[in-house]
Length: 236
Image (cartoon, rainbow, N blue to C red; front, side):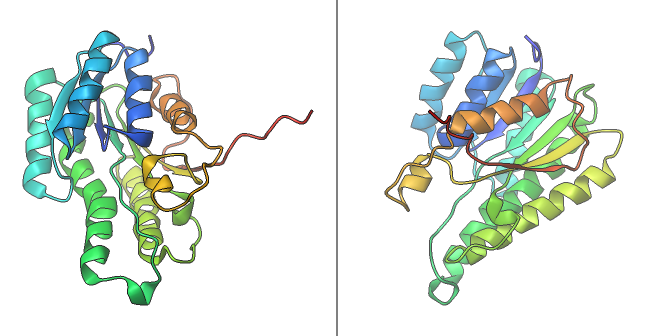
């Protein structure tokens, strides 16, 4: 198991992409810390991870809150003694035209998607720096590569995540590897709350790429912004 003994912290880890990432990390031997706002959903995931042999831990935290994030990192170190991998996955989206978006909605998107990444990275870096396999992997979006109609604020937040990723990677060159993963439409509860159809890209596809980047054997250059689209459909 490539991540045996390492500690991975996943924000927004109770469902969707985050859930798939947690399961993939645990399968490779990582001790998984799940941070999410919903305690009941975290508990269900912890039971699954422990059944896989992971020393899993649930911490309720809102990544928009500096106090919560500081507590999250502190508890992770207190319980596990180390932090090797940070997966910034927590995110929200609204399908709305710009002029229909309220300031409250703007703040929620930017605070969750961008400030949350900033806060988690800021307080995790001193500990991840001590790891021989220090990684920060930010779950961004194709909406951070090009603008999408009706998702202007969401796209702005993800463009910010990609810029933050490249800048942090430059600051931490030789110490911690930093990446952004930019999925296309993924079949999650959040996506289905906006659209009726189910896209072919699944959370497990994203988890596979995250696992590849998290591996000590990864040779992917730090600072990479990696787009993920659905695998091609076999032609009969």
